[in-house]
Length: 253
Image (cartoon, rainbow, N blue to C red; front, side):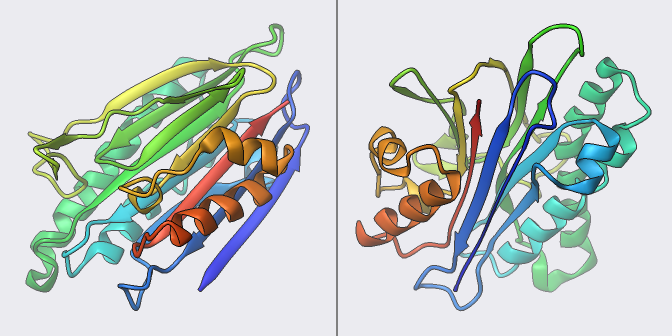
């Protein structure tokens, strides 16, 4: 089963943004264990509150009976961010965003204790907030909160860069949502965006070990993020991926 959606807007004062997501259940699962947040351009909450746009991909860990449940709990813990942050000053909004993965981890950790059937549930996840620090300056920023091995990429001026670091030891995840709060680790990444940038978030079924030429996809998509995510999922599947596949693409103009 494939689900997809795209959106675009000139919400920001100095930039336009076009976004899309696509998700597909892998052939080794009967239920898609990936979840995502997608408050796209045109979303009434995001544009009314003038806080920015929020996107995330959460990947339920394979072998965990509660992978899908963990991913859903982590995603749900972030849904009110745009409303909560609306009355805040910029620095307060940053602090609130940085709390989101801690909330998500606590939700999954508490869920483990509440039901022994889901005692081993866990997920990875990468969360992105795109925001404008000031109305007076032409600056657009992206802030990421990364846990596990979902990946975020920046495509800029003909180069593809992995923004996140896989939290693994010996090929095994060393940090996930559902970890004891005292040991939970979040990698925070903050970058300034520029016109022509492409931001991507993808679950590990898209790159492990089924790497796709992300720059070639950009040329094929011709500036259309929905075409991009469709092609990314399709090529990973044809390359042999049997995992759930979820991708979000954001193009900045």
